[in-house]
Image (cartoon, rainbow, N blue to C red; front, side, top):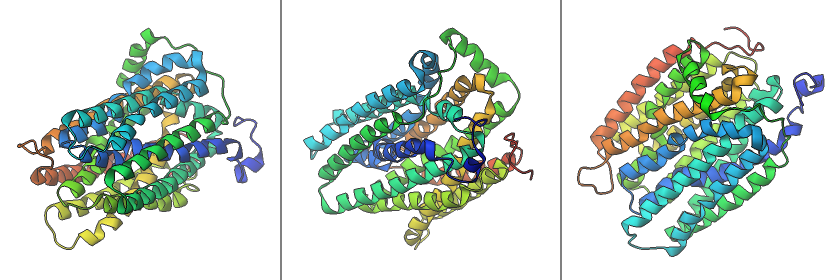
Length: 430
């Protein structure tokens, strides 16, 4: 299906029907992603005795391995979009057996090698995810009509958020009723089931002809050209980097703070995180029919305002303001709305950064560059927040500085986002 062959009826409704398998994939993958790299991962690491530096490292892997995505574009012409994504998703699922095995072993006083092995398994999970994800957006951009992209990505986010709420509420219930290791074992088993369903859904998604040959030796020249040429690519990359200097570290360290310093239970923390996904659902319900009609800069700026509000709340809470615990669910809910708006606008805008013939490499270079630089942030923050006595926990004074910087960066981002062009042709002018 292409924009040229889409019927007028598709424009009015029902146009996503041929791509429903992509939505099933998003839901099943959401389960695996939530457990494998989300808050349950942080809680599992904490249970195994990981310190703040290890938490930062595990949280950064998903970004740091993204140069693999650039290299993986060279195999797209031989493997094709579907085969490469299925291969990447299949191998990454194998690394979920490591935390499952550690949970079944259930060491009451885990030795240091267990947290190290767990962090290593997160690296493997993220590495093969990067190999497969090189096919994801280019594949969807090739089969989705341009006038349906925003709606599809918003609906995809809505499905993922709904599944995220259900997964986290189930996880919270497991922690409330079972011993910690037993709860983790059930969660990682569920993640493996989600991986199997996601792979089956990929086989049902319409395929597309693979791109032309991409030589590994030419990738560095293409990357250098994209980095140095003034234009939408470089400008949007700069904005994304600015937003991730603190943003990529917010969720894992907020979770770690609530567990190690505020001493909330794992069940309560997962319920808070579920509120984030509830907020995403609310945001996506609103944005899914607006994102293809209005300039994307408006959505980026609305998201920045939401993040500023959340970081102001956390600044007050960590600084010791009393009575704010009751506001934590609302703060997580607002963060979810902001993330939904930003992520939908971000994914919708990405295909516009390069023409179709350059798109696979351009998107891989963008994602890898952003991932490498933004991925360093959780590592740096992890060492900055780590206690000097090397015990679990964090330096609260530096966590306060974390939010001060985050607010400053978001204010600058809000100003710069007013310059984002929208070249889709269907969006109205501001």
